[in-house]
Length: 472
Image (cartoon, rainbow, N blue to C red; front, side, top):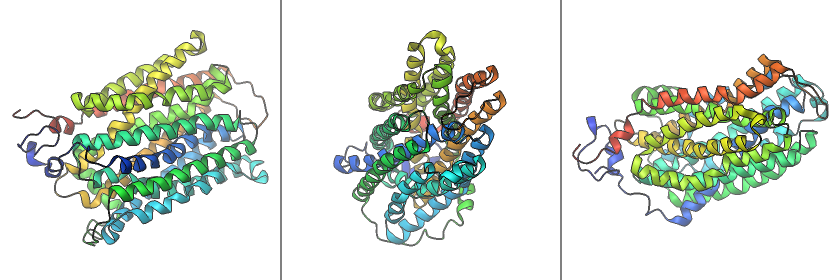
């Protein structure tokens, strides 16, 4: 039966037996276990936000690293993720086949907090040399990303591993999105407050210690939630060596699964755009609005709407489908980014309102793609659930690539505009070209990227098949 429509008819080309067999809207999932699972995203929200929001600014305006080198220090570690995440996904599938769970790998990822602190705890002799400081941050970023992948990949495989249907997967991910938003809000609002205006490395270390403790607590709660939602299966071992090396699996899942390939291509652009906006927020607040402390306000305006709008997006998707809602989010996000170009000339109200628009769209940009990934896996030819981790590894590698590409593109714009780096406590007057780069890099560039994402996403056809009315 088609879980989305109740139809007995097979989907076109009979490509989705699993997708239509797992009937249920997720209401049967125990709420306490679902809440514990979702709480694991609070810690994830801190990690995906704080480095993206502050690392580039920390390098250029506290450690005195030039923009091009700072961008490179963030890009190279994320390039490692392109290989790392699919490998972790393959390892996750092997763990589930051998042991019946992915919990061992998930628990290992809870060691993230010390590496997160080390990112900002740059020793004095190292901090005095911009090249050495950039190398320190890059090296610890690799370590932190590896530990985050160990947690993120098996964690995000959970909705696909569960026997729930089209709307059920959106329901599970909507719980996760609300809590993820809380984590992003905690990280995005508290990190700038605790770090101050970047006047010392010590302030950043205090920030990292506080938010690192927050992260590890909720990671362990999430491990318990996964354990409750997915009782251990009897180990079978049959999927252990069945699909070959990790990179071969990447090639295979992208080649064989067109809906997944389109979704991944679109999300690469979406992730790049949202992380570019995060990286540009401190620069925009300080240099365009002349209010360095306004970063917290804009970050709250960007994230807080998701707490209210995520449940609304979920309800709307039950009528419109995920695809239409996602396209709507992409279109309005591009418009909101262009509105920010008004800057301080329009007062503070217009930038805040435009950021609120971005925030409403951001909720959907996170909810719908993540809930569509299980749809593509379940709709693939044959039984693909034995390598859910391979799909999740490709997906999280895509997200990590966007997380690197966004700040790098913004740092490239700053470098082209002649942005002058500074050490902690130094005052530097930026040129007119630097101000132009700060503004256009934060407004026009993300609008163009999101418009490209919308064009790619419009090629996604699976949602129409899954929501097609009976008899059509």
